[in-house]
Image (cartoon, rainbow, N blue to C red; front, top):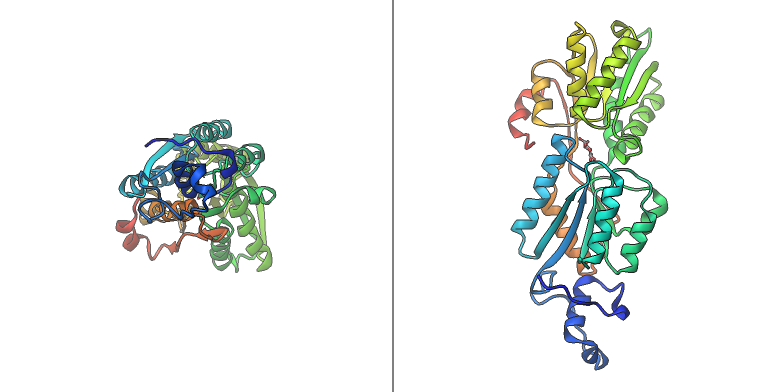
Amino acid sequence: MKTLTIPTFLKGEPPVLKKVLAGIGAGALLFGLTACGGGDGEGGADEGLVVGFAQVGAESAWRTANSTSVQDAAAADDRIAELKFVDAQQEQERQISAIRDFITQQVDVIVLAPVVETGWTDVLQEAEDAGIPVILADRGIEAADEDLYTTRLGSDFVAEGRSAGEWAVQTFADDADGTKILELQGTTGSAPANDRNAGFFEVLDAEGLNYELVDSQSGNFTAEEGKAVMETFITTHALDGIDLLYAHNDEMGLGAIQAIEEAGFKPGEDIQIIIVDGSKAGFQAGVDGKLNYIVECNPVFGEQLMDVVVQVANGDDVEKFTPVEEGVFDATQFEAELPNRQF
Ligand code: GZL
């Protein structure tokens, strides 16, 4: 896919328009030639769009499924000439460096799954100055920078937290001596960790549940760190007094289940467990009676993302946020749903 040198006076125009006009040359522009969209009219110049994708990492089944969904969708979409994929290993500096490389390579659209909410202002301003639109996939960034990206496609993490909270209120409403809760938070500073926490406790407080948050620490969305934090919880607190573990993703919940079993307790019985994502392994643990509620977080949105990429490249109006479809599942539903899980 050839990369055109874009005249500075075209900076900020939709990538497809920039390419066509740059290809025709400034002279044609002086004669008022209006060119709209690429050669195929399907949202890309004949050669298709070049997209740079700065992915968080490969920390969970959710993330791996999300990367596969996006890569497969790009490969199958003839409007996309190339997807430049970078796995940032959960490090923001690697994502920032990848974005700068994408700018140098003059990609048409940048897709970013921001590992944390803050620290993006400078590099997103550089993308804007280069006339390259940015789409957030999955996680969000702080509101102060919301003008530096075009749109976000992903989950409503606050809604996910509220769903978890509603089940907790229904389950423990009659717990006279109060519900003791442990929380395994996702990556510190990430939108899903911040918002799943906010939504959960917003509901518990609004519904007047009598609860105590005994401890809350980050397991960084990984099984290893989730297990290690749970082991610390177990040595620090009398686990037999704990009613509920709220884990912000499957991996941390499954790691915690291992630690709970190794300590001689029965996960799902001695301590009830909520997880968020809905992986095959998570549902299997539910079928095995080792956890009690699953809030789905859907990673399979690659095709939807490609449509958004083309719309943005064409300069079409798009909503600032497009939520992906997600559900919730209790113990009566785990067995029937397990065969449907895609990751
Ligand atoms: C949520 C996503 C989270 C998942 C985790 O959209 O960002 O990151 O819940 C993943 O499994 O690590």
